[in-house]
Image 1 (cartoon, rainbow, N blue to C red):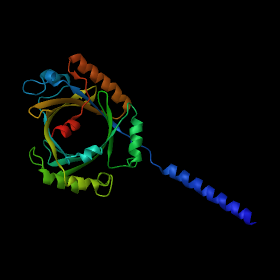
Image 2 (cartoon, rainbow, N blue to C red):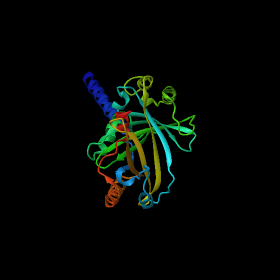
Image 3 (cartoon, rainbow, N blue to C red):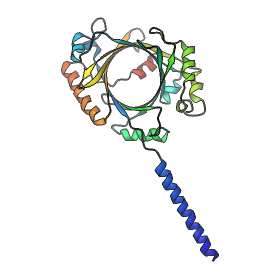
Image 4 (cartoon, rainbow, N blue to C red):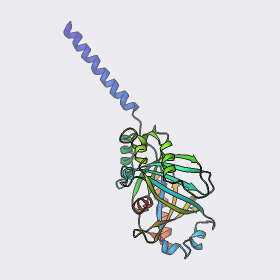
Length: 281
């Protein structure tokens, strides 16, 4: 009888273990569902006039007005770029016409080739899954390179004109609004601890023109970024649009690239604005 009871107990424990494993698998959240932002570079020596504004042919091609929206942008990190090297970019932006600063805490994952699911799965393993409600998942789709970005966006009051806060105020704003995933990334209070010793990378005052392409809103932004030599300004001109599906992003990316190439405007490089700002400021 004892052996029968022992066998029965083992069977119950085994069944319970299988049930728990099944429940665990059932409760495991799937990957986040991204949207897509296509970003292609335009040749600044061709599309900008001597005043470093977009030429009239560019504006007319995309039904853009001559007016632009200014945006002043800066990032915070320490001298060793600890946050950036961990894949994080805390940013403060002041958009013309807005009364609040835009705060973004962005986590990036490289996409190997076209393996978008692989990047989403890696993000899932690090806590960014389908139940993550406070971050927007986006595939930044460049000329050849793709990146998964997960952004937590907030606002802070105090914006005036096009100015950005000084380093002390910037630290305070980003520390006070830091989301948990950023703050506790490698250890408790990691993010805010790093921000306490951070400095400003930037600022960069960019200008955005808004038009249309293939039925979607198109931005063309002109970013004056300090050159590697430090003695002059290098202009980055980026065309971008957003869409909800991978297939639409792929189709329209090819269409936009073909148009830019036919006009002699295309620059066959990937857009690396944040990287350039981190390297040069």
